[in-house]
Image (cartoon, rainbow, N blue to C red; front, side, top):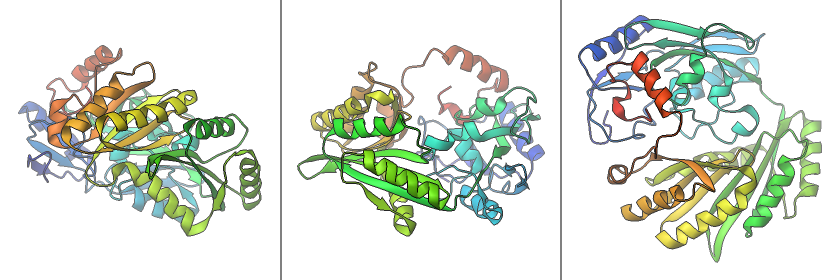
Amino acid sequence: MVIDGVSPVVATPDDAAAFAATLASAASTRQATVISGGGSKLAWGRPAAIDLLVSTAKLNRVIAHRHGDLTATIESGATLFDVNRDLGKHRQWLPIDSAFPGATIGGVVASNDCGPLRHRFGTPRDLLIGVTLALADGRVVKAGGTVVKNVAGYDLGRLVSGSFGSFAGIVDATFKLSPIFSASGTLGVVYRDAAAIASDAQLLASNQFEMTALDVLSAPAVGGREHRLLVRFASSPEATDAQLAAARSMITGDAQIVRGALETDLWKVQVGAPWIGDGTTIRFAWLPADLAQVLTLVAAIEHKTGAVLTLAARAAVGAGLLRADGPGDALVSVVERLRRRPDLVGNVVVLRAPVDVKQAIDVWGPPGDAAPVLRAIKQALDPAGVLNAGRGPI
């Protein structure tokens, strides 16, 4: 496996004790270590020297599916695709959408990876109710439990969610699940005006609809940028039809209803849009009410830098992924211009980029107010500082 041009030694533990022992050995010998599941996000983070890659490929089982309680405990190396195939035998699923076919349970938790389903179900952090961790001192610890309402121990699951493997290795995780819906339908509307799509999105978000997703895709088109609003409902056939009709009557544009295989393909395109090709992918956030201003800012940055920009956004959440294609100096300029607008956007993080771009900027941006606390936790859990090889936000 190659990470930013570096080929580390690979270890593949097959149980929790071996996982923890591998991390303890790495800490004692000061080996810069990266933990990997499917390898789909190995290019994320700062460029760094890496000595050891710990693969969770052999930790790939669904340990327990408590279908009566709508919970499941799953080893970190199991792929999201395989897990949902198994859970589907009981008409249940883990409602996380990832753009990466090989994404693993540990990977989606460690990166808090999510897509349009975040509108209804939240992020992996929100679905996690228990976790088993391998620590750098060789211990295996558990937190949380196997039922939705529990108060067992410190909430280490939330701590490691989005930590990119900087605190501990995830051995297994327990999630609350959702039933598979019997019907689904999506409204699709195309706009040219940023204010119009923002107005319709805000109107829908402020009503009592139970939407599964409320997403925007903004991309270059002939004659200017084009914005697409995608509104998904999933429930019983009757409830789905009623909500589709009600939402359609409120939208100012010409809304088309899509179902079946076409709907599935439409959302695959939406989830995958920020990751097409080898461009730079930037994550950032804003206030949901500022969507029109954000779309205008993206258009202005595209014009000034010459980069080609595609934004896939969670309209009611105020978060999205921006794909930037172009020469390295243009990509660096895109990131810098976003970070110059803290009044409008925040948490500007470069997830994926060519090595020369990552060397020109700090991919994580300036440390926030929580940085001292996070460094103290890092020092407590990984005093040798070997986990994630310094590539993460801490």
